[in-house]
Amino acid sequence: MILRVKLFAVAKERAGRESVEVEIGDGGTVRELRAALATQHPPLADLIERVRLAVNNEYARDELVLAPGAEVAVIPPVSGG
Amino acid sequence: MIKLVHEPIDSQAVLDSVASHDAGAVVLFLGTTRAVTHGRRTASLDYECYPEMAEKKLAELEAQARDRWPLVGCAIVHRLGHLELGEASIAIAVSSPHRAVAFEAGQWLIDTIKEVVPIWKRENWADGTTEWVHPGLASGEND
Image 1: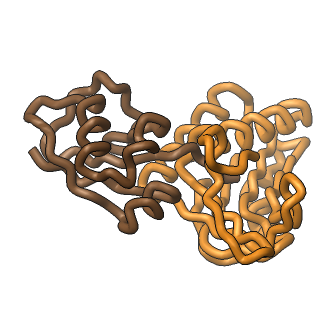
Image 2 (image 1 turned 180 degrees about the vertical axis):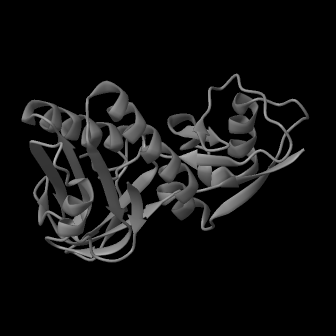
């Protein structure tokens, strides 16, 4: 399945765009998504192990299984306030 | 009350939103744009967020604060976009029957927002370079 992944801040800057598409196997997990992001989008490779990922607006553990159509986002360490 | 805004924050309006005759204390926190960070001079800041998740997380934090402390009012307003020096990027106002609770809840809210709410700031340094701030990420300046 193909998932669209939203990018913010340094991730958006590195990729040069606001989102990227990533292909992973059906029933793939967040861990597999990280690996796929790194190989399919090399500018994000060194970043991807050091950021949190959100699925459907919630921080996601690496074991979480992704459903088709899930809203996924790369969340670099936050700095609001 | 939770708001993400692109215009200057009206701190009096934030205070008014938590005013109540049930409150004996109101605490207002403003986060403002600082001129110097770790010896480097800032020209301005830009903030961006993941809107849907930021609103959800802010609402969760308000609910958690209300569970934990007997608050009367609770308001969080975060500004986005371009900010000049001295401008407020966030206003948090809490009201409660007694002051200890209002101070404690206000401190907890700003500390927790800085850890979990997907909002990011970019330093526009006076030397013309820019840098997204990502605490703990090796290449970034931490705050």
